[in-house]
Image (cartoon, rainbow, N blue to C red; front, side):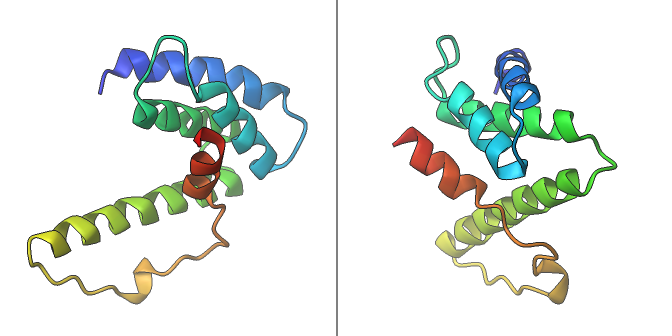
Amino acid sequence: MSEAMLAIVAAECRSAVDSCEGNLTDKARAAMEKAKDHWMVLDKDIQFRGAICALLLHYGKDSPEYERISQEIAALRKLSAILQGGAVGLSVNLTEDDLPKHEPIGLMKMWQEITK
């Protein structure tokens, strides 16, 4: 992934997030709407990451929203690792630390709905 392409998408999504008056879900939707079908960055994964990056930049590291978004992204990474490990025969054990501490936002579901 090109960091430059990610930065382009994130910068454009940031303006949509900053101008949105709603809550976290509304801002996430605004960022994703801006990111989808980006005129210059065609990779859907980079578009999604750019929208998430804009949200994280908007809220800042010390906010509860940042923690919530980060937790959900970490859960998506763990799920991906579990699926990849299972495909090659590895067994994965989850611990109590792997359970979510916040209510899920549904970022991936939201992205799939917006990009369908």
